[in-house]
Length: 222
Image 1 (cartoon, rainbow, N blue to C red):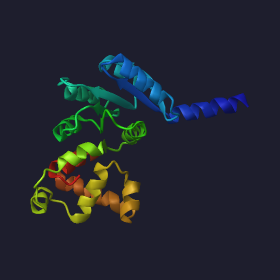
Image 2 (tube, rainbow, N blue to C red; image 1 turned 30 degrees about the vertical axis):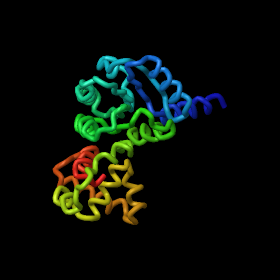
Image 3 (tube, one colour; image 1 turned 60 degrees about the vertical axis):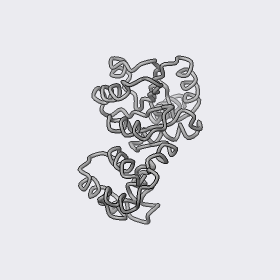
Image 4 (cartoon, rainbow, N blue to C red; image 1 turned 45 degrees about the vertical axis):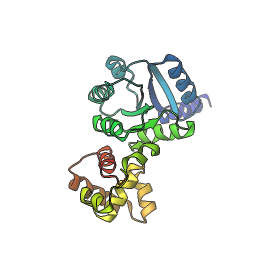
């Protein structure tokens, strides 16, 4: 019986998302650690005030929750360095900024998620889960800034070389939807969705879903 309990415990631990929390304020980092640790989905393996590559390589987290404060202009350098050290590790930015240009910068640098600091607790856990699953998350309040007032539909179409169906799929990707969710939303098979995404990547000359999100923000279709 005890052996069975040990096996189940091991399975549960494997399923938990290994989370590394980086926040320049120790009190905030501790609060985030307490919050995530209370969930069965997460295992907070470390907290720190800065990204240290030696520590990152040692603990090998699934997701780094990286806070950005006013004046921390090296955020993109930190993201790039972290992705170079551990390409498989996902990075979710927690920021007080809502400017779309900041989102473009961090996604281009290699981040997979961007959440605003006053986000609802349940939405934050959803964001980190999405990132851990290989999806892209961008706070909806930031996406709202991407569409510039007065930008005409014709101008958006000129910027966006995709078909109507491909545009719909990019919009859903920008919302953090998986292929299965896109399939259900549009009434398509997952194979068809994958084929569309392959064509989208080819048209846009990209190789990752995060780059599709950047395109969506730049063209105002997100």
